[in-house]
Length: 632
Image (cartoon, rainbow, N blue to C red):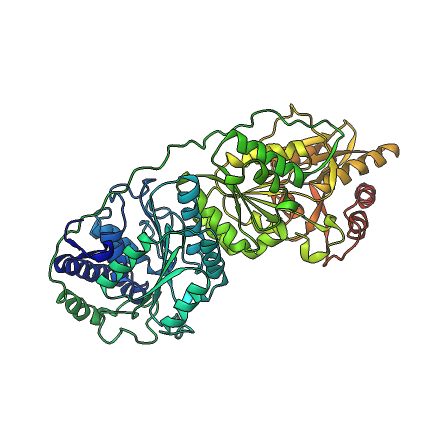
């Protein structure tokens, strides 16, 4: 590139003019960050200032991208894991010419998309950050996609804070990156010593950071994070390293360049006071020697053109009514079939693939299966990265209970406007002998709270196959709840399914009560209907199919036809489950009464049938509830 001289070993050292231009760009990034946070009277200028040289070298020397098309699929990717330093990210895109400088002064205003932490309302943001410790997992997913699915030249850069490296998910991501030899990935640690309320535990002990990164299998360099030439060289060396991701441990100072604030306690998240701002800006400006606009290298355009719209199954479900199959197995079979329909469908799992049946996908499409091992937080973040820029249709699976430890990553996925699909198996106490630590009894409540999330709860193999295909084509996060026990197939291969459309599976003109069950409890409700019919009592039975959105119309019309009586029965805790969802949905209708049968208290080991009985959600319990509902 212009302004560089070749050195032995292939490194082209930038000439002094170029190095000064990079220093000056760093100075301007500081000024933008200080002015923007001053204008909003909030934000994190000191966290921006420690990263100014890193951002300058990345955006105006190392990274290859189209500044007028930030979301171009061939661009190098950048993830700001330390999301509170958002103003310097916005400053970099202003210097690159994509954002007007005047826009920066609207930082954090309600009518401006330059928010306090980055979100994909901005086209240059792939994943929302700000809940710390999550950026590197997403960067791993992007790098894995670039290397193995796109087989393209783009590289992925992730800037982390030193404080956030106390998060376990950072180390899950470091383990993943080295295991998969992601040599197109660079993690840069901005070691500015100070956290929010006190110093980070390692302070400026860059040697310990280096040893830890090396122990996790990363090619690691320690640099002065304010020396643009050292940064240029380390980033060049990273690009030459094969078979290993690179970590750059950059020693920096929080508030660098701000007299009286640099490396001082108690300045986190505070704008520079108005009375100090002019002198601070003058001090930084006095260091800037040029206004040279640095050329940005275009990307190598070698990303394949793909389509992930309107994915259809190659054939209808091949199941017969009355056959038995667990919905968890039907998930694995359906995903395998979907993978044959579109080559961008990918599967991830957390070392439970022989329980979730994701192993069937791996057997059929091994090159599109990612083993994430027992690191569910990282698995969700990797899936976000895989799905970024619509490069894949990602399905991640584990026991539904274990998604709860990734709740924060899932909620950040919603803020990231992601389209990932999560399948949780082993739901409820119907798993039996394994006991309560393995039983998902909170998962419906959790996923119902996620904005824009679709919650599928299929009750047989046919509806599971439709759930998988619908999830692949549905915007936002999708959750598919599958069960361990084998249950009979109740739908024909011709049956049509849609999001938000329930099925009335048992109906007569003399129904006394509407019973809503899902998964194993739908089959309990059908058994209860058979038993009640022998006693001359008819009930209507509804399979909601999706718990969010609920088919409110079908539920209300059925309830009105059955004396206003609704009984919900679910293998889940009462709080946040199907009962509460139904009660909320019908709350505006006078004269409707909802009774909820749900698991109360922490279950124990036992046989599935014993547990359903013990916790009041078996056919026997439904029969009793039905009788007492109209006896009263």
